[in-house]
Length: 283
Image 1 (spheres, rainbow, N blue to C red):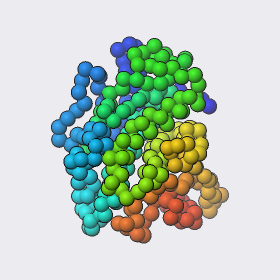
Image 2 (cartoon, helix red, strand yellow):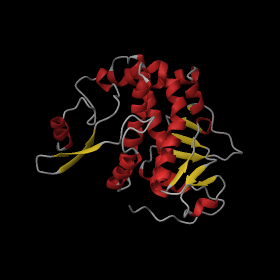
Image 3 (cartoon, helix red, strand yellow):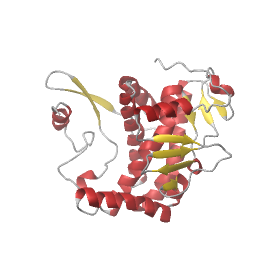
Image 4 (cartoon, helix red, strand yellow):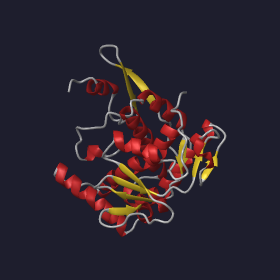
């Protein structure tokens, strides 16, 4: 499978600068700032550290207050506590997974992003990250960079992606769990969906949707613990014979509790006939 050619990295340039810049270019509502070991993660109004969300205390309460207000404002009714928590977790996990998957997709480099090394400003759409260790392939020009750890092949690198995402999300899921009314498998189902659908969507924006889908299926070929299922893309046939791509989510976003008539096009509640109708409807 073809991947982009890796440019040589100067010693004073982050191995992830180009990937995060490209992410911001195609998806301007999310920006990534890298900090060094000598710099603190950003603080101040709106900023929350991932470690604070994992702790599940007042910082998480303040974080979820944004979702509670948004639900009441936009839908004219208060959300259940578990619905508010589900919205908040999705709005954190979807972008944070891109910290790992986009450098892997674009550069074949996999950063380790423990909760102590990530902060989020949701109103501004900003992530701050401190990368001190990453995995790469033997022929990567960044293999000699500080913090680089060389792995032998593509499958080993995919294992690094799964491990980096799981190591970051595991404590965050535990922080959210008391508010979610969901078991571990359902929570890791959400993680599965965030990884898959984030990569799928960014692949589309990058003009590489088929490769993004293929990479996602290699990354999550099935139920590899702790993830709940594989990427699970499947094809439907439209009324004109066209091929339509869909998947069945491993988790439910609970949006139906606010608008029962509306479901996501990848929701298991949405039948194939409705998916085809919605995907082929004229805007």
